[in-house]
Length: 138
Image (tube, rainbow, N blue to C red; front, side):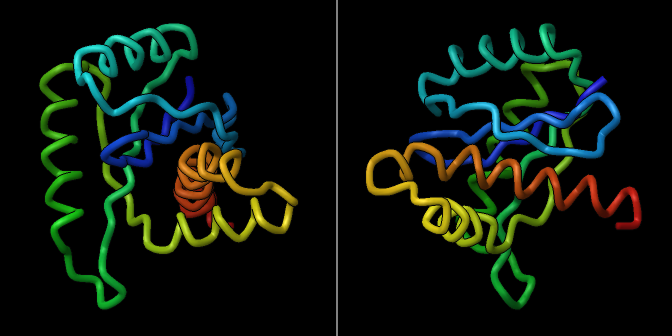
């Protein structure tokens, strides 16, 4: 069984997946955020194919730990997912994951349009790896 991580965005949702031992996160893809029904159907397909037991959704927080308007949108997204999917869904602090993703991709020589397309899935992988590391005490 694996963990699926989602980095919520208004246009794209980054997707990452853990290995079966829940030690490593791998960027998977990004999915269009709209239409929601198609997103849910694609998530159901991934859940079945990859044997997902938990969905982890990044919850944006301000640097002081408070929640802003983006967090409210994610909470609404999570509520909608919970009513559409049977897999447990948990949120996880995603502060600075997009900043880290941009940095890693830039350092890796990924430029322009390609970087914009990969940043969401990379942010999801960073989010998931943070969660996995916290569970293992790493």
